[in-house]
Length: 235
Image 1 (cartoon, helix red, strand yellow):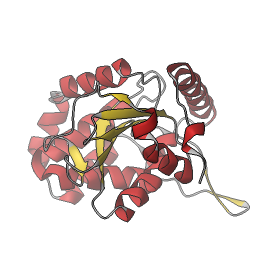
Image 2 (spheres, one colour):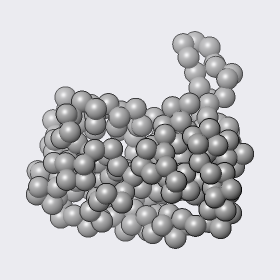
Image 3 (tube, one colour):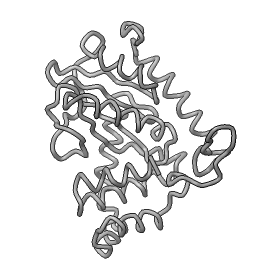
Image 4 (cartoon, helix red, strand yellow):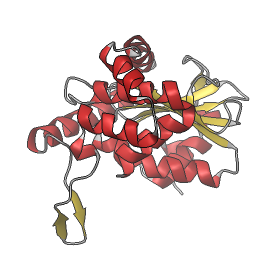
C-alpha cells in the first residue's frame, strides 16, 4: 500500500488531475460518442455496454423492468422534477473543488474532516487516501450525509465516501467496482453516497440519466436508485 503521506492532494493538484480527467473524457467522447470501447483480452468486444446504449428509451425500459408506474415515471422525467436537486448537487461539488468526475470526498464523521479525491484512483490508492483523511483532511464543507441521500450503508458510519458522479462518465464506470469492493469489505465501517454531477457539456446523456435515476428512486427508493446505477455502470 502506498505511503498515505504521498497522497497530499492539494487544490492545485486536484485541479490538474481534474483537467486531465476532463481532457481524457473529451477525447473519449470525440472518438467514442457513447463511451470507451470494451476490450476483453486481445480482442475488442463488439457487444455494447449499457453505458454505450444510454438514451431516454433505455431509461424508460429499465424503469418498466424495475416495476415503476410508467405513467408517473414519464411525468416525472418530462417535468424534470429533480433538475433543481441535480443542479444543487452539481454546485455543491464545484464549491468543494470538483472540476470533473468522479469527484469523491472521503468524509470522517467522527472528526468532521474531509479529503477530496479527483479522478478514478486505483483501488489501493483509494484505500490509502481513506486511511490518510485524519492526517491530510480539512474541515468539512460539503453537506453531511443523511437518510435522504442515495446511500449504501449508514450516514453515521465512521467513514462516508461521497461520490459526485456522472452516469455517462467512463471514469465513473471504472471506479464503481472499486468503491463497491471497499464498502463491502469494510463491515459497515465505510458507507457510500452518490450525488449527481453530470458533465453535460461533454456527456449529453448525463443529465437525462440523472433525472431518470431520481424519478425511479421517487417510486422505488434507495434500492431502485442503486439498481439503476449498477445496471448502467456494470451492464
